[in-house]
Amino acid sequence: MEFVIEVKNLKRCYTSPQGLFRKKEKSVVAVDDLSFKVKKGEIFGLLGQNGAGKSTTIKILSTMLLPTAGQVSILGYDIYKEEKKIRENINFVFGGERSLYFRLTAKDNLAYFADLYKIPRRKQDSLVSDLLNLVGLSHVPDRRVETFSKGMKQRLQIARALLNDPEIIFLDEPSIGLDPVGALELRQLIKKLAEQGKTVLLTTHYMAEAEELCDRIAIIDKGQMLTCGTMEELSCEITRSEKEAILAAKRQHHSDMEITLEDIYVTLVERS
Image (cartoon, rainbow, N blue to C red):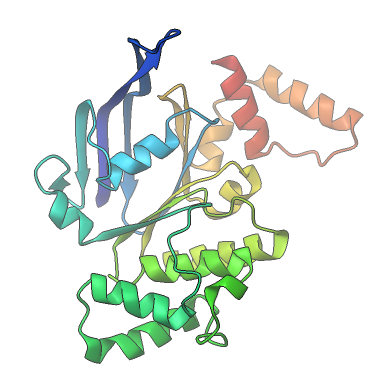
């Protein structure tokens, strides 16, 4: 079994100013002794509350931040010494973050970023066309991005992230703020990426989205790992009495009588 991401005892601390004149400093632990592995070609979900350490973890894995302590290997490369080799083989999309030029067309945006990736001009036309087709924007290549819906902009951001043909794509809350149709289109696109052999590490607050997409899921709280596994394995983390209490509550509210990822998540976080 090939692991393309290996994280061992990861820790990241910040210092933040405190007090009336902000002269004192307080140490904040964002990620605390986190360990997990991601298999090649899987969709791996990282779930947690706001402030749990999800975005910090993704920024470390995508070489935007250095850890305070711990070991991180991406595609066999050491994050401390071989970050340039890592960057050549990864890309990322942060939900709600503007990383497109709104006054340019979809095609011109991709051509601009292709130049930044030093992709030869002779290859750019076919590459841009193929990516627009992949993300379902082949019918609007010459429309300005400022006229796009939020879902269309997010799909174009994923096309931008695929320009360097990365082996691993980090998606940090990519569906935030999307309407139901846009979120559905995004989920379909993520599945398509996995079918093409891409490894996807996904953070999201939408439990149904994670349950539908992810092969395995890690739940973190206060920077620490609570559990990691498939839905079947996560279901075994809650006790029989906890399951009975969940089902009793569902009967009262006439809900579907199934234990969902949301039920498991809430139970584990509240227990911690």
